[in-house]
Length: 214
Image 1 (cartoon, one colour):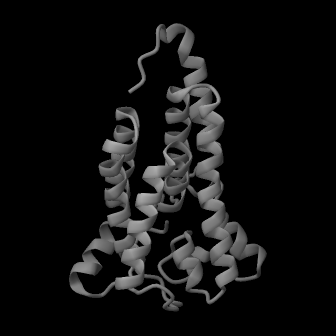
Image 2: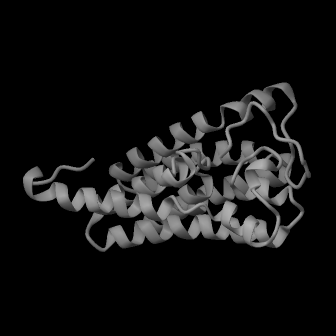
């Protein structure tokens, strides 16, 4: 990963990149968009997740699409800004954005699961890897209609495809994303195994008790 010539000279830039990326990633667009559209607090709807899949359960496809786009764009934005200062800073800013989405200080560190933001980061840092991950996600979502399963398989595809399409540094970064995404989906994995997972587009007004409010 990062191997600076001198930590004494590099740490201010690394810290700045991480804080900047975290600040960008921590913006909870799903929560903001649903409140602005009069839908209330998305954390009180469906699974309680602030991501696009749960926003879609409100029946507002436009708001869900806006949430998905914004979460992807903030990943792209953080990664591209960091890339202007070199690959190491890009990795730090990207990691900051990912953790900011998962653990936003504004929401008492209860954020999203990181799938859309991760996709934006991967597309920005290795578009070829991003296309593979998107392809796996879309194919899984179309065939099985489970957003969580599509996210889990797409996450696995990222570091594997990056082994051939990107740098070892990005393979490591994407592997970290994959591990954390799987951890954040632990409740979804249990429901998938039990056959109780909600399919894409299904409406729900009751909060699922064993899913994190993310």
